Image (cartoon, rainbow, N blue to C red):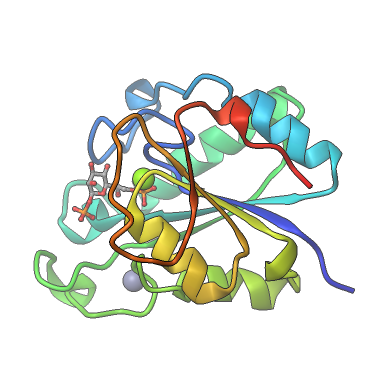
Length: 178
Ligand SMILES: O=P(O)(O)OC[C@@H](O)[C@H]1O[C@@H](OP(=O)(O)O)[C@@H](O)[C@@H](O)[C@@H]1O
Ligand SMILES: [Mg+2]
Ligand SMILES: [Zn+2]
């Protein structure tokens, strides 16, 4: 039995990307994110977050800080009637990280590792699933993982140098589940 998922990038999709957010007071939720999640949840989509968190590897904040912020976000969404099922995160960086976090990993987007972990854990039907990101790296990770419905949420026109294909929107209300 497979499930369909809504994969969400965090910074730039769930919350405004102010740069390496690690505390609730740094979180400004993006307009329409709760409405979008309710719309998808009502259609039976599992909501999963896939987020690069090189701020951990860079030493800006700890994994514990990230996990506490994720718990706070989960509770905040629950109060809106929305289940954020899990946060998949990559703390690594290939050149600007300390200790064990300094590595070329398979989970930092545009690599598909986080999405493949989610696929295996939740038996996700990737052909029926959506990815919303704010960077080309999010689109590349989704395409590599076989996520069929890819949306780039961005005000600025991004050249599709990737040729993988995605739909660009500047409002989350333009993204409708199947
Ligand atoms: O958008 P997601 O994947 O949820 O998270 C991105 C964040 O981890 C940070 O990723 C950084 O990129 P580098 O990791 O330094 O290349 C920068 O883009 C920051 O502005 C951003 O806050
Ligand atoms: Mg982002
Ligand atoms: Zn990684």
